[in-house]
Image: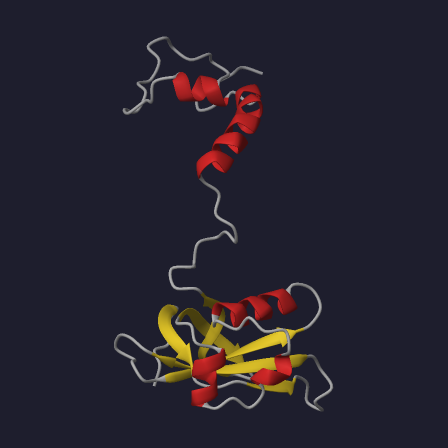
Length: 182
């Protein structure tokens, strides 16, 4: 049995099949990818990812999951009813599953939220570095300076708590407990 916590697991696809959501099968098309965990305490356990081909970003996320599994085809029907041997051939990549607890119909269980490339939990789709990052930094320099960023960066960092002023506060300043006659 899988743990009831947010977790990440390295896994490999061991199958694939399709279906439709909805009580009457009239909803969005979904792909189901059973994974076998290949490391750690739960090595050998299985958990299934359900990806949806719907409106909004769901189709893109689902196609990304398939790509992260190593599929580079363009005909989804080749993935239907894959057994473990076919999954090893068409979905060969090791992935990192991001799992979280999910409650549906009053039943709580561990659910695959994301299928990432190993180490792919960074919050970016396309890394920026080297000459591209330098060019972007140069482009942003004026904006940063106009917002006072260069002045803040040049100012020494304060490492201690500032002391209270030695002059007495104004009698009407917040926090002064003086009787004000009116």
